Image 1 (cartoon, rainbow, N blue to C red):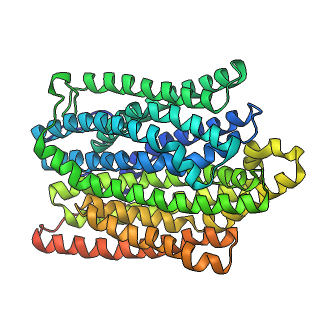
Image 2 (tube, rainbow, N blue to C red; image 1 turned 180 degrees about the horizontal axis):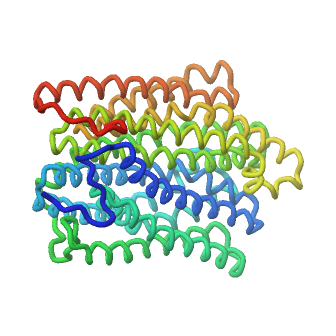
Image 3 (cartoon, rainbow, N blue to C red; image 1 turned 90 degrees about the horizontal axis):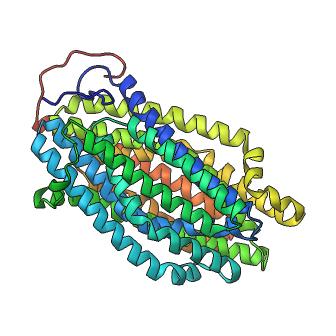
Length: 477
């Protein structure tokens, strides 16, 4: 049996609720810090005084995620496979999965760079970007995509650490490199007088430092997930398992981004109609979306916990405790989502002012931007708990080895629904409110389906692999 390291969590024994918190909180802090640094990118870019800088970065989000979500999905596959092998007590399979995944990360990152550089400007133009905003967005994405190999490898390294229950090391590393990112943002923008290009260069350098530091950590590791450079090769069985669990997640992420790109294009169209030559609607939507991202990454940490805890229990065939994992994760994610919703709604005005305060010197543009942001807050952020439940249900299904099923449910419940909404419902009432309503409705439908199907899958496994009665550990165990 694998020994638990100092920063690792024994997920298979004892009460679960405290361990879910212990796993999720450092991960949540890591994700929130990353979002804070991303927010700093946008805020500092706005400090450059270049008109449209914030909107340009905001319009890149969905398109960048289209590329990045593909290999991010494979990182989920790495998390599932490594955690499952740890749960089975298979040290050799764990090591092969670790080294195979890092080679895959480098390969996928290189592919993303090539694809991103090739399609970025045409795709941004297709979304509706034009003129100065198109030039700024194209410049930002070209530099950003040059750093995707670093981003891919660091994501996979973090996924490996999380699979063994270590969420503290990524927190420490990303805290340091994030502060470096902010410092370089300020230097490039305020000292060297750069704009979106300076912000992009700072992100690239910070991601490279992540790889360097995390690589040193994994080389010095004495456990099953130790990185040995001469073992870096592709193992066919490990790659097959990672692709089986990661490909559906990657496809889901890409298609989610496509649906979000359609919505982004719709919002750009509303902006062009409301303020020709300006970017008030785009700026307001970008600011609200960035702030909404803090709620997303906070709840996503519980999704990561549901994937990892369920995967280890699936590997150990402890399906009765999977029910406890579900209860704990739904409870924790509800608390997190409600807290984030309250904070964003209560402090919406000062938070938004950080992004669009400079627009106050143009009263009409400021009014449109704030109205746009408030509309997104009221429609999307208020019911955010439904997204949190959708994420946990998806994570449980992936942990149970049903990644494809989870993807199909998510694509039908979210992507397909949103596309139908934009093409059939939105034209009847072409307003921002109708655009945003597609999100909470799709979250609710998908969350209910994920929960129902995960319960069915778990019960089927319990019949296939009956366990002796377990002693209750309290705390939802």
